Length: 236
Image 1 (spheres, rainbow, N blue to C red):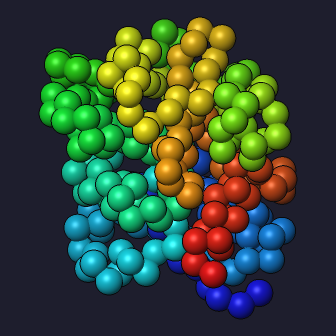
Image 2: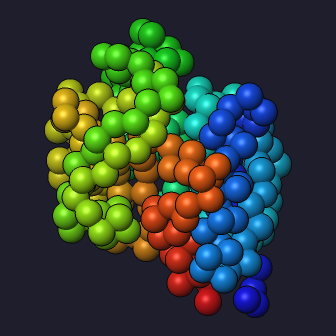
């Protein structure tokens, strides 16, 4: 193990949130298994604005974590845009995935009235809206697109993962993305999107589920391992 890789864990830290406790653990479990030096550094959303360009460029990877709506949504969207345009490995889980979709809708598809229903119940285009039924510490089956990065990471087209969320991507607006490079590559039985990825990017993946919840078992989560591998491949 040689080079150290700095990974920003982006969110508004809350010690009562399982995902916030588990994310750095899950990252280290994968890094240790792959014999990679990873420093997971917590980045509060208001701290994003204080970063210099050189500090941002020092990041080997960016992981946007659950806990939306973020206190500094604009800052998080700028950081996601940076990851997307600079091809920096990016993982967004739960709220992080939601904001990745929102960033693309606003900055790439020019849907300026796109937003999160959780943050603004009257938003004109609620790209992210309330789920039919809140998922609290539950697991759910997800069907993956076979030729996707996430499908290859799991080496399967059917997985079961854990959730803690009440909002998600509104399938009503999927046609807005039909001719774009943002792909919806995982769906539940109700055909609500559960995973996204960006074409022509080494690793830009978002999931509605929370893979970090694998940490207490000590298991190397395949998606987090794929994220770590992408970081190493991008920087070495």
